[in-house]
Length: 284
Image (cartoon, rainbow, N blue to C red; front, side):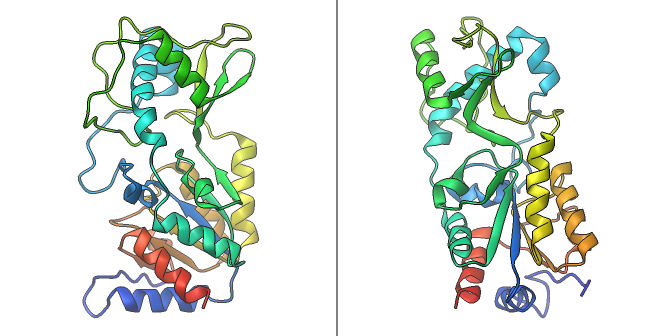
């Protein structure tokens, strides 16, 4: 089918949408593509959801060209790390992990950098845009655990402290106005510049990473897109693979997405509720 149904429209409802999703997905191996909307119930804000603040995230070109930009980035990232890393997987993450253990979900390609799918117990996860818990030297390639870098930064910048009620941004940072005293972290091997292993705006997804994500979609008999508006090209490219293979596509997201016209079923609802309902149906 190519018609798009949306929960909440006249004559339909959430239960009817779940019924339709179950009909499309039962007996199929499912690939899942997730975006920021899956993590909002864990307290991590969405870039594009209702009420999301207007932001201009730092581009990779800005980060590489300007030491002050690096100071601003690392100061905000350090302050946000404690709050971001304390986030816990929610019911949607747990539902996907259970669906994988039950042999229904074959893998997850996520646009999120929070690591919550892995912490929830999902094992076949491709982090398309990387993860904030890893840091790498831009010169020699040495990798570091983010916790170790955070400890060093705290020691080098004792003045840097986050006030209570800090406003966390979707990438796990906060906005810092004054960064002149910021001591940047450096590589302990070659003294080179460090960068979290996340894909900045304007930076390409590594070829091998995208290949692994695409393989998850190609092996599947159906695709669920959960909590992504599909604005970022990596997501829409994975959707295109499913469209070309003519497999059922179920999109669960609050608000419109770039893929709505190509979905077999579009459900306008929160991901935690819908994924939990699908788990209950598909594992019954």
